[in-house]
Amino acid sequence: MQGFTDVHDPVMRDRIVDLLRPALSRPGAVYVDGTLGLAGHAIAILEACPEARLVGIDRDLDAHEVARERLGALAERATLVHAVYDELPEVLDDLGLGKAITALCERLGAQSGVDINCAVDAELPQLAPEAELVAYRVAQEALTNTLRHSGAEHAALVLERDGDDVLLTIADDGRGIGDDAQPGSGIQGMRERALLIGARLRIDPGEPSGTVVRLRLDGQPYGGRPRPHETLGYG
Image 1 (cartoon, rainbow, N blue to C red):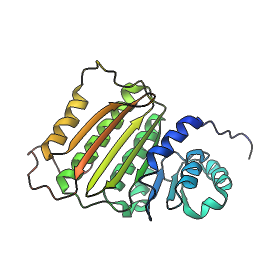
Image 2: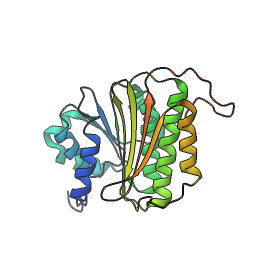
Image 3: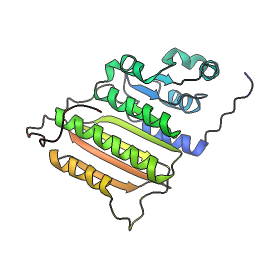
């Protein structure tokens, strides 16, 4: 089909593959590409992660046709979806917390035009509702900061099992936070939420650019109670 060009930066694509590979190396892992386009990232990830399956979402049916042709034999591990937001819970119904985070990535990516890659481990430890809420809110705040302040063109989110813990990583290729940057209300809010449940939050400069946010959550149920103003749901 005429008129389509793959414009993905190979260096950035390799960085995304390296970031997503650990979460997508386990049997049953699902990679959700909320801006499928011509499937440049999807092809690289499926080739690097033979255990992973793809859910590719795009509003453009012409792009679906080109992506399927380019996927070739990899299409056997792909489900391409002409999706609107209301369809996402049905498409991703088996992902649990990942469903809400994946829908968040799709919504923010579509609204902003930033390419947000999302990978969710197929087998996550059980989290207490308080911890699930913190994971979702940190993902929401980190991605919002990326879109508003970093000037990034690409971002990646990984939600994966690490032993008995759950590790959430959000990275972008934007300007970065700088060594002398003062934390704003968004970063302070993430730290307070993590502290509330005893989770560990790190915010570091990316390599060679951008910012990396890491949240480590204890897989064992948390016995505390949320603050009165928190509601245990996603929104």
